Length: 269
Image (tube, rainbow, N blue to C red; front, side):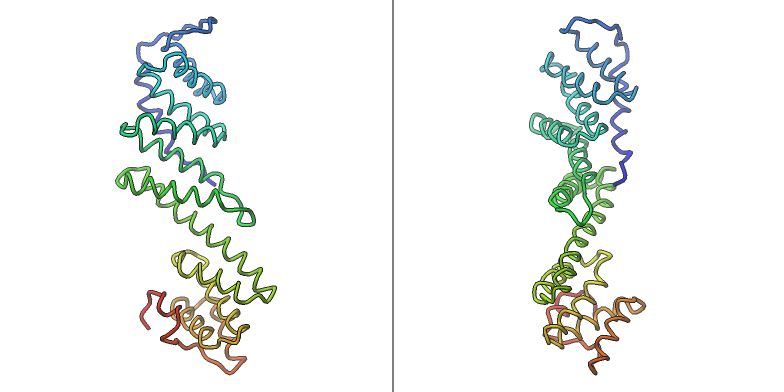
C-alpha cells in the first residue's frame, strides 16, 4: 500500500513549537521538557524515527501535565508509523483520543489509526481482519470529519479496501466453484453483488453466478445473472463467457422478475 503524504502535514505546525527553544544536549536523565522535545524532533528529521518515538514518549513520562505532552503523544504516533510500528502508532493515537477527544488534532489521530491499519492490508490469500479494521477506521474519518483533507484521502482508500474485501470473497467463491460446492459458491458471489456492487469484481461475480446456478440446475437465476452482466458490461469478456455457457444449453440471457439479482441490481431493464 502506498504511504500517504498527509501525515507530513502535522510537521508544519510543529515547527512553531520549536521557535525560541534551546537545543543543548544534557546527559542527565531528567531533562527540561523543551530539550526532550527538541531532541525528539532532531531525531525525527534525521530519520532516526525509532529514537524519536522513544523521546516523544519520554516527554509525556517526565512532564505529563505540560502542553508539550499532548503534542508529543501525536508525534510519537507519527514516529511509530514511520517506523512501521503500526500497533504502537495505533495505541498512541487511540490514547490521545481517550485523553483529548475534543482536541483540534483529533482528526489527525483518527487518520493515523486508519492509515496504520490500511498499510497492513495483506494479499487476498490471507486473513482480511486488518482490511475490515482499516475500512471501519477510514469510514470513521469520513463520518466524523467529512470536509477535511484526511476525509478526502480516506474516501479513496475506502474504495480500495472494499475492492480488496470483495477480492477475498471472490477467491473463496472460486474455490467452492472448483470443488463443485455450488451453493457455497453462490453465497460468496451473492455477497459481492449485494455488498460490493461498485467494485471491479462485480462482472466476474455475475459470470460465476451464471456458472454456479447452471451447476445447481437453477436456470432462471443463471439467465438473470448473465442478463444483468450483459446489460451493465456488454463488452466484458465475462459476459461473452456467460453467453457461451447459456447458448451451449439452448438458453439465452433473460431477466426473471422474481430473482434476487434483479431486485438487488440498480439497473432498469
